[in-house]
Image 1: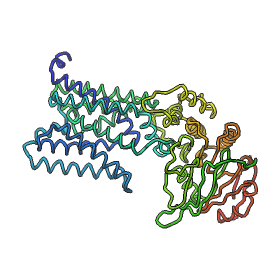
Image 2 (image 1 turned 45 degrees about the vertical axis):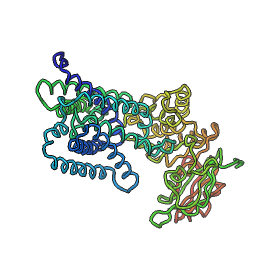
Image 3 (image 1 turned 30 degrees about the vertical axis):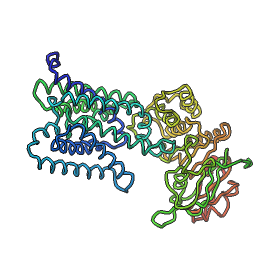
Image 4 (image 1 turned 135 degrees about the vertical axis):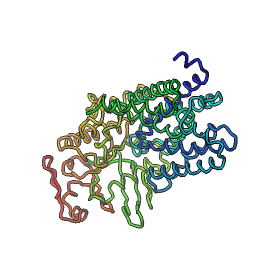
Length: 265
Length: 258
């Protein structure tokens, strides 16, 4: 463990990974309770469009991923409120649409295929110093907003209409939540990868829900599961040269299966 | 009980609501005053819930005006003066991670300022609301494990936590047993008489509460306001409303409509 942490790239990976585990699990609690789990998958594919554009244009992929992902989140919320469309259908349409756009961009600039692979599945080797600064700044803003508005997000997740009749600005708060989720998803793609970030947002909360405890305890359990999975996953990834995102997801899946059997009725 | 009230809480004038050219509600004009205890009855699909949704700003009327506490609904901001208990109150998601206390605390959310933590006033209001509903002993119980009647009380405690002036309940008894229903009506009557909270609720079992209510709104696309509920219960309007021969029995033990 000490040997592993003597490498600078591993220190960066652990810092980014733990921060992302906290962010993904805290935001994931609200997303799961709102029955909006698939939004993380859709936003991750939108972030991939940002990565593809950045690789072709020579910009920092993380920044462009954040911008495209946030724009996509706003589009989802707009479509959900302005048209009579099913929420899951909107997510499916944007997911496929984003992937199609990303594939076209990548196929035009074919030499980027290798670096794109790291964004799809995550790589602990890929976190640069600049990425750390970006993750730190955006991550702390996102965490701050999540904590400040947690009681509002919880109420809306429980019953959106009653929350609205109590005077909460539900529409604005919904936009805020998807914006925060979009930022977190985009920040996560270095470590976890586009195709796997949804798992880190959803599975820790679903595992925590099996214990049937109040909101605060559920959130803390979810956070603990996510952080442990990231630490164990990245350690295994380092020693066995495994892709970090996939290893983290298998760890969190193990926690989920264990929780399911421990709490079997 | 006399109806000597000042300015209305709700002032509805010539309200129309139609979907796809079909009228759901037409020419509704009514007023709800401070301290009243009002029941809304009518057949399924008659527009009772739609009326409540319009009053709460959840639907936009096709025509007409709604004033709340003297202000046009569009400009009304003091929503925490209104407590709302929706139709599905007793049917909560079994897996939702919430204790009874978590749910009641939600009632204070819109009163709390951004960045401020829970105040003594918040804690007191939550405790009081739970005590009024006689659920203080259920604080740490998960809502999924509570009975229908207990959940119903939790939902009303949440609505009471913001110290509302009016409580609006949409068929709150769905999925609740008869004994709990009767206790529930006693509680509503107590809130109205002792706390001076205006109560408006949609119900099917009008016979049970007929002795307490002040006015009755019967809704079937149009509204008929009966200022004397006891007279209304035997009036011909009931037959007209339901489209069949209908009368209600004034009896606490045998509430019934046929």
